[in-house]
Amino acid sequence: MRFKTLVVCVALLAVFTMAVRISADTDTWWHLAAGRWMTENRQLLTTDPFSLTRAGQAWTNPSWLAQLLLYGTYHLAGLPGLNLLTALMVTLAFACTWPLMEGPGLLRAFVLVGAAAVSGIYWSARPQIVSFALTGACLLLLEKGRADRRWWMGLPLLLALWANIHGGFVIGLLLVGVHLGGELIETISDRLSSGAAWRAIWAQRKTAVQTLLALLLVCAAF
Image 1 (spheres, rainbow, N blue to C red):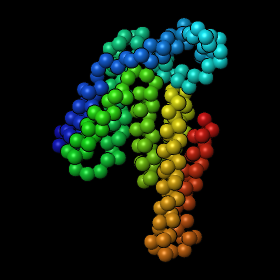
Image 2: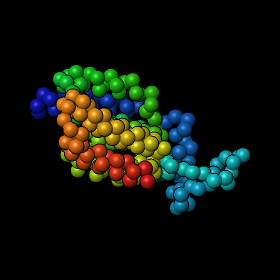
Image 3: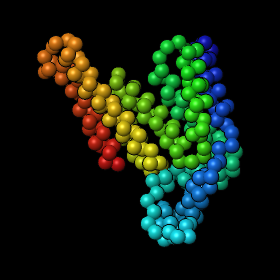
Image 4: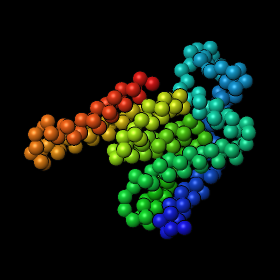
């Protein structure tokens, strides 16, 4: 095994080891209850069946898919299964982050493990942990797409899935918007630094700008 590959494996193993712990918190249980209700009744939750004061009221539930995943995992493997699922989501998030980092491998590993340790307070068996992983996946698609725009074609599917997992899908829209803004800023910067005509600069950048704008509109439609 090459040393660079070994560094990546050890770093991600360290993240996974940190994340394999008791992941249930106070919110986990009502997500499991929601997943169990949908499984037993074979329909999505549209009204509140749990509350005393709001029973029967309309319930907009953007986390239904994650709740089914959590309950299915708990039903099959109990709390250890939830702990493992949480650890896998955390590791996936940082595995997506690794290719976006620059610098020597050991330094990247140190920063990655440090970032994981700091974010550990966020890790729990809730829909947000899937959102955590999807944020990393969204960043990876966006950055890879700068070199090969075919990567960007996965964004609408990712956002459509994300919108049914957790309200954090808005983060994905923000990331697409930030990359669009970055392309516009680089267009202006190229014009100011090179002195070339706007038409020539725009010809180089317009495909990326137009593609990201179209993707943002499509993703927002979901």
